[in-house]
Length: 246
Image (tube, rainbow, N blue to C red; front, side):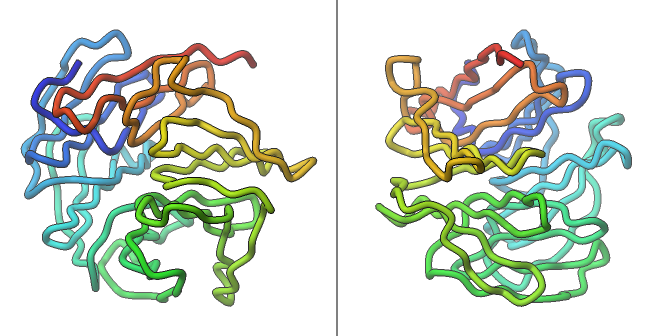
């Protein structure tokens, strides 16, 4: 448990350290996968999304209130420089040497020096999570939309594509895997899997598996573990750990 925190973003390193974004405070918590607190990095504001760039010993964290993306040295456990974003920012992903940041109805593509490279338009509403697909398309989650189809947007021309005929409900986090499948976390306490082969959504975890007000999830780099932030709304977030069958 992480008391008095709303954990809304999870980043995982190769050695299974968890970097946890807190929505109500300025601390970025670092825990072991056994729950031991290793550090609490004082950021320049409340956080939301995080993406790891481990080859550069860096994590990138969105600070929606500023709005900016802030770098973190994951070896020294220290905050770094800020990159200003043109609008409110929540979800975040890496596309090569550029950063994709989710705003309100927009996805900003920025360089690591802060230059705005491109703006992509989607449905109005905060984009809480972004994930890069097989063909560099961007999958995105908007928890403020009660019912929606699973969609992605093409990076090259901004075309929005519906991927499934089935609806999702208040998607708050999303992750694409290397095979083209997409995992979706719903605020209604469901983790679902979109299978690329048959284009169907399958429910993987529910309240019966312990989910209650989840907000984010992440896999370990070897895909052996799944981490989910839970009980987020009561300010005593917990991290659920599930073993994955490979």
